[in-house]
Image (cartoon, rainbow, N blue to C red; front, side, top):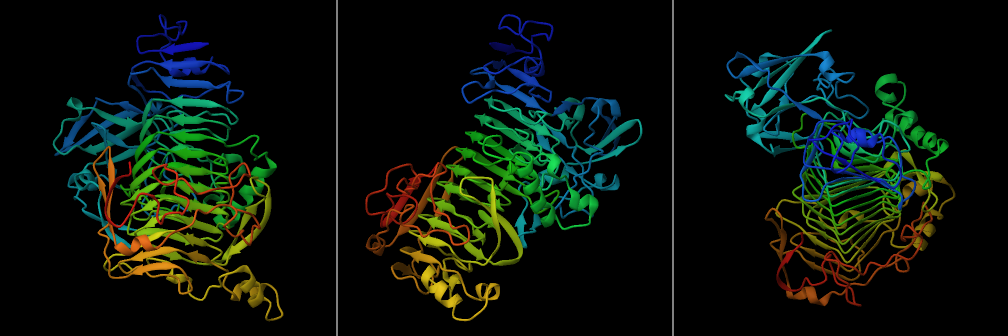
Amino acid sequence: MEYHVAKTGSDQGQGTLQNPFLTINKAASLAMAGDTIIVHEGVYREWVKPRYKGLSDKRRIIYQAAEGEKVVIKGSEQVQTWQKVEGNVWRCELPNSFFSEFNPYKEEIFGDWLVTVDEKKHLGDVYLNGMSFYEVSCYEELIDPQVRTEVLDHWTQKIVPVHNPEQTKYVWFAEVDAENTTIYANFQGTNPNEEFVEINVRRSCFYPTETGIDYITVKGFEMAQAATPWAPPTANQPGLIGANWSKGWIIEDNIIHDAKCSAISIGKEGSTGHNYRSIRKDKPGYQYQLEAVFSAERNGWSKEKIGSHIIRNNIIYDCGQNAIVGHLGCVFSEIYNNHIYNIALKREFYGHEIAGIKLHAAIDVQIHNNRIHDCSLGLWLDWQAQGTRVSKNLFYNNNRDLFVEVSHGPYMVDHNIMASEYAIDNISQGGAYINNLIAGKMNQQKVLNRSTQYHLPHSTKVAGFAFVYGGDDRFYNNIFIGADGLEDVGTSHYKNYTTSLEEYIENVNKKHGDLEEFELVEQPVYINKNAYFNGAEPFEREKDKLVDREFDPEFRIIDKGEEVYLSCQLPDSFEEIIGEIHSTKTLERVRIVDAEFENPDGSDLILDIDFLDKKSPEKGPIGPIAIMTKGNNYIKVW
């Protein structure tokens, strides 16, 4: 059946094209497996809560914007009852009933791994013609707010420019008592009653309140301005839109922006733990996260019930924590062709769960062909990145591009362009980095105080625990490009590591002992046929390599808005190094997990398709793009 929703409709109507419903929620309360809800042009200020689930990939419930029509779902309300207080400061007093059971101006940003807890921030926000304001902690700070031009990036400990300095002088403050919520805002000379001013009211725009609402498609909407809470892996993880512990969602062709914390959630629900570290304070968050995995497994966490979502062709920007977040619920999903930018650049709050895409337990998740830029961190895979593939993504102008933490593999990073000055945090083992262009530093560390889970291949079943000993990594066919003043570019930090499993086993067993011997011997690394330019340094035992420390490729990513280009020069010697097409058969198995690099269905993985989705020649190229050659290269990459 097909239901229609329009701003000219009525919820007492029939839901037909001629007699449509007024709200999306009315249609959502009726649509069953196999039905389609078509929403016509207009702004819908509601939290859509799907009631029924689809039954299979072929019997979905589809929510879609009418073709060629602009449909916007907002978590905000327009307010035009502002009264001038003094100078540029205005106030708006609203009864608490205006917010129903959820008041974003009372709800604090709170939870595990949130670092900026000294100065309380709230889930509310104020928007002037679509631009979000900054919250201040007292009324006095509203009077003459200062423009901030620089801010500390907590991870890199570098002072970085503020994304939009002029925006920082637009500030708000709220007071909530037993009856009313009063919002004060500095509009910098603008009369808010003559402009388009909105305030956060709803937590989400499209999110079921029940779990297990499977096989939903959401297509073609603009969704914005939701008061989403902090979403760590040890808590319920609601987003502006999300699946809420379900299976088989497709979220595609949407424009999603201005989520207070996270935009799209394919993450954990609350029954397996909700901010116990911050509330109970009796165990570290690490311990509660371990418990969450086992609790989820007892509650049916499996491929048959959870995950397998598709997130594709979306534009996601201006969110405080993540564009896409997920723990446990993200398993077996595919994330591709998304444009993600301006994530966590307001820096109103800070914690250890911030990235364009932040996933825990990304088992068999495929992340490919995304454009991720101008984010505090591009992609963060944290815990249990196993069977995960990161392929053909374009990263640039991020404070960091990729972070893989306390995982044991096998995980694959191939044919990516990582163009930020800080390219990789490798705090894991069991990875393969094949045919990438890496133009930034790499940080590699061991973790011998946090043992994390690994799984049976292509399964949520836990197989064991391990520390991160460092190494057991593979680097083939990559181009490393350094820059003046930039250190740690290349693979030289693997100095003194063994180069085969046989050598490793021999060294471990030279003395009689057990655990202590494995901690003393460096795991093997497999590094060959990489190119190093402009100060990038190779692994000391790499046999076949191209090193030209003095050659500057003058590498640049040129962002023209809808299109992006790569500009790079390569020396004549570039033609002398020929890579290999790598596959399951050529890559050494992962030691701890005792597993192979393969596709999610268990078939052989063959890395013969380049960044431009062109089949590579039989003798494999170096780098992500097969047509790159000596001399000037100017290539469209988005």
